[in-house]
Image (cartoon, rainbow, N blue to C red; front, side, top):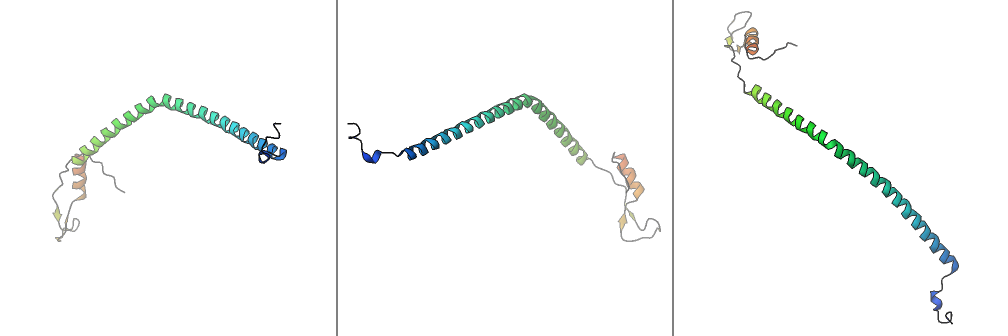
Amino acid sequence: RAVSNFNPQMNIKTRDLKELVEALEKAQAKATQQGNIACVLLDEVTQLRRHADEKAPELRAQLIEADSELEALRQRIAELESRTVKMPHRNLGHPKLFLLCPFPYYDAEDMEKALAAAGIRVEAE
């Protein structure tokens, strides 16, 4: 009696039913595999976060130290940039030939002495 009341369009062939079951099993296997991968990745992320949390205070201290060093270097640069070097008088004429010419020049020895007095080291190439 139940069969006679059943709609014939609702009949599913055994082959189609097997294909649906196989597709469902494949999908479930894929979902299980992806779930396992997600668990492994979550474990990795958890370990990385724990490691980052452990290293954070040390890195923060290094950053503060580097920032202090940077500030000290900036102050030193500002100090050096603000210094004035008193230049020797410019000479007129050729330094070796004692000729007068229209181009003023600084005597190299006088320049080196002035720079040395200001604490600036000079090296020749």
